[in-house]
Image (cartoon, rainbow, N blue to C red):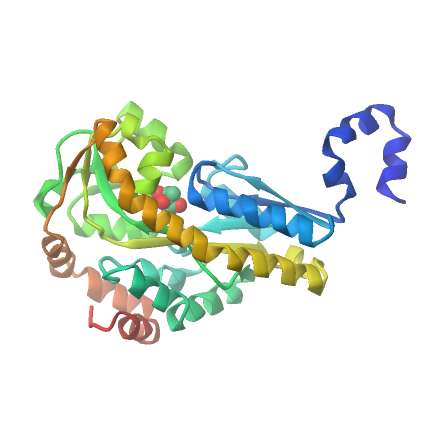
Length: 333
Ligand code: X2X
């Protein structure tokens, strides 16, 4: 039975359907969830990609984007992705590590000196290694990871200039053992909070700080609830584009090609937009009242080393994964 015939038989539904003609005409209507605001480069480029997918599929595949954790926080959405309740989700490798432990390897503190090293690794052997790990857990990763950026520490109270300033500092970290471990190694008091609840946690004072790239401090309006920014660049973070396996395999080959082509094809522009925003938004955030400091990063890295952070995680990730990371960054960590 054809959907249109069904709708014609039910007056109210047919009327309601008029507002969603495209969705009703599409053979496949899929959801793509993410935790970022619509103004973030990820959502701007993702919208362009899904528009193209609709067009190039001749209207057969409509992917509706749900930004700002509308379908649930990251932990909940990962569960939905696994069950197929949500077909697509973009997620940090570190949060994904709650399901795929070694996916977090790209988030080791101070591993990448710059973006050139990041993309060489993530489009190369390290990315391929992570995707193979993800596939083993039954999710389908797109080839190109999108950018979140190098992360900086913000606080509502004191400015952070040295690792000692982090001592006992109540900081929010995303739900991930690696994040928890890194800030414990810094001597801070990390609390796991999903991004969907971060703005509220900061405004009510549940925590005094958080860490994220500047693009997020801007698009999620964290400047309204945070005062100081320490440019620590303590780690790089990205977003794997993940599909539920059954939903992916339900798409005919030609549609899968259109999806992969457009989601991977927009990655370079999204990376360029985000890097640029992370670079230029400091001035805007200063005007909005934030105060910036540029601490000595080496001191923070030394603190992690002294706390045994690197040796602990080398043991957890194993020699194979650690070797691929060290080869990618060209130094021993
Ligand atoms: O939760 C965060 O801080 C964010 C938005 O950067 C991630 O998705 C990891």
